Length: 143
Image 1 (tube, rainbow, N blue to C red):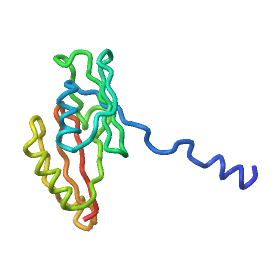
Image 2 (image 1 turned 180 degrees about the vertical axis):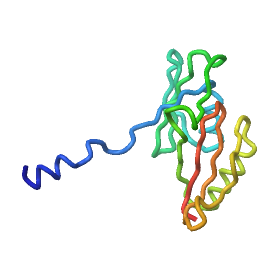
Image 3 (image 1 turned 90 degrees about the vertical axis):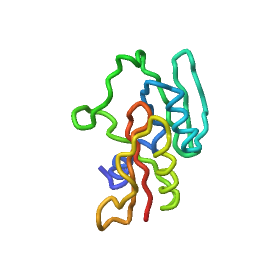
Image 4 (image 1 turned 60 degrees about the vertical axis):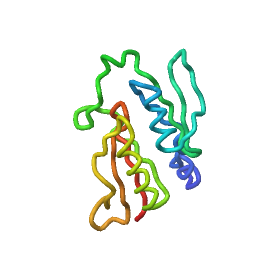
């Protein structure tokens, strides 16, 4: 095999994330979290499925309502295989503080811990909350 063939074979076959799909119990509560709290925009909807899409201009999420929200089982990150959390970047420490303050007062949101360094020696700061419906969302930035 030539060096060019090896390099071509080693090249990724993907080009980033197209979208992330999240299953939620309440589409409107999820929409309010992303569009109301974070300022995202609704970019699509299919009430027959039911689903809606939201975006911040760089990241696109599809939000799918589970078939029976009353019997849906919440995800346990310590025992289930699946999405541990979704990490979203914010511009700077001021934006991180702003999102944290908004999240603390948003209906159905539970903040796991306030903005803090990821590790004592890390230039990254973050906080994690659960959005309405229980999905863990991390917000992170360089300090």
